[in-house]
Length: 324
Image 1 (cartoon, helix red, strand yellow):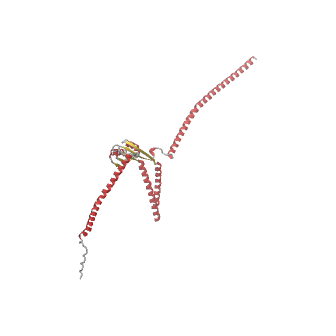
Image 2 (tube, helix red, strand yellow):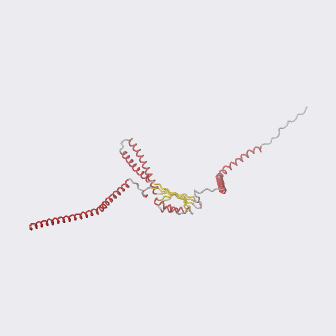
């Protein structure tokens, strides 16, 4: 009995040992699994933002690249070019400068324009010492327009300045398109003329070709005119002497001013009268002297017969007869 009890106790101990071992192994595996799960979750949680940032950066870069491409395409396709150097602008200006010596200032203006690569388009001067005036029309490259204006303003005391600009970009583009279309019409008319088989068709096509070529020449002339105006700007410069009056000076009033004006009018009238008299005097001498001589001769001839005629006395009285 003792032996059987001892055997049963040994089997029970082994079963408990095996059970404990199994439980310890299960617990170890569970702990290991939980640690792995936690580390995996931590790794996933840590790498998710990095992947999001990386993916976002890649997608953002692609989106930026696509948007940049689209923007460039849109700009190249339909957006207008707003750069000033790519637009056709006509610059015109007018200025008045009071200088000490008009002729010297005019020579300096000519030198300024020549240095800028332009030329003098017109030169009108009125010399009268202190109140002398000169008007110069300058053609300068558009890129040198502002610089030339500033240099001329430094020659004396600037009295006025008027600068205007005109954007003809759309007009130039439209004109270019019309020229291309008109050239195509001219080429078409020439091809039809080359295939004409009858006299009527030949005459009709020649007339049509002439009209189309005339229209093309007119459009090309307009294009050259716009190109000239945009390439060379126009500046009208008025140079005035120290005593020259400006156009916007107010008129003086008063008795002395009126007297001065009346005296000037009287002197001007006498000058005109004397001028007319001087112009008529040669004619009066040439025609008046012979006429006076002729009148004197005729008058003397009328008096000569009256002086030479015999003097007639009273009629004779008949003698009285004596009585018988």
